[in-house]
Image (tube, rainbow, N blue to C red; front, side):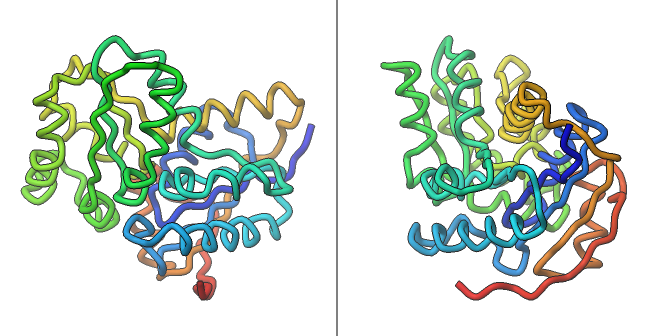
Length: 266
């Protein structure tokens, strides 16, 4: 038993969907969440900068004495996997478990949507192709999704969201993909808008849920579960804005205090 907290970080609030999924798996775990909203979005930044930011985020969360860390950011997971893998605290990313799940669903073309940096890195595509040689992968960057979601525009009938979904997912629909990887933890919040456009038969593989299952399995297998269900939230942006929008991502109010911390310089 280990009652130290699980650490989670993301560029903004999207990683709260991973926190929500971890809660479903392990309701008693203590969790510390860091949303780097002052430096969001990560998806348009160059790879070298993202790697430095990944190390900063890891160090910041690890300093809180956590037992493991989830990089709940598809951009960091795809552009800095070696930084995460070599970190002294056990670290999880959202790429590997999501790719494994996508491979299990590979009975036709596989769509992948993520930030521009994630798609540019090719990490999701290579991972799927490694596990499913010859699979047809249709990868599309969706740069407008994160800003829309972070503003709370997740209603499937929201005109701006509908327009973005129709624009970005048109290549996925035209290739008749059988499954779609949501390679950014934000994207689960617009899953209904995606389903309405692609149809109910397309299986959505959500990075948040895949990563939560992998982390939970590790803690159970190594007898590291334990806690009182406590939560604390840190953000480099506005704490009140974070608290107000977090209910959209969590489906409830945050249980713990939301504190502002100074933004880090890259």
